[in-house]
Image (cartoon, rainbow, N blue to C red):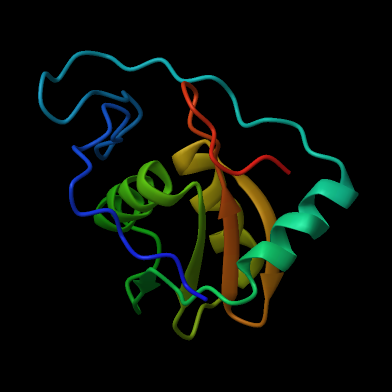
Length: 130
């Protein structure tokens, strides 16, 4: 069963705009995030199992990983913590998956075909604990 999007949730303050400087979308203040958590292979496997019934939330087109894609993935991670991202005809899917993970400060849990599984816990109230 797929988890529905929370429509009543307000935007998370950790949105990442384009460029190296990470700033809040609303206040444009610099945002400092905790680095992606270190997970064991068993924890990543558990998260892959939890992600199995989920549908991809973000689709990456021919342009590849752009700033708009990173913002969309960042918003999806803020809302869900565990998301799937579908890559369309990537030149190098492994580097695209790494770019998505590093651009959003998430953990790359898996790459199955052209689908990337990313996890980033909410710093205040994590809902998914691997």
